[in-house]
Image (cartoon, rainbow, N blue to C red; front, side, top):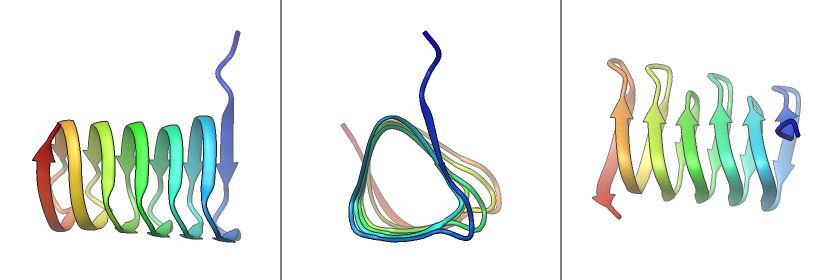
Length: 103
């Protein structure tokens, strides 16, 4: 069975919480909390809310707390919040204002 993927493009703005049982890929503006199995954000994304996912890959702006088993912060990311994770990787060039805690 193939994995379900939901995509929100850069012309989408969401005000409210999002719950996705599988993978969410976004380049949009989201004002609310995100719960997903896996989350991938791209360079134009702006998230203002908490994130809870088993695997997170951040490429855009994020302001809020992140709870995840695995967090990857790419060079285009701008992250502000508390990270609670088991595994963390940060690419050179990322903008960070974080407190990281290991689960």
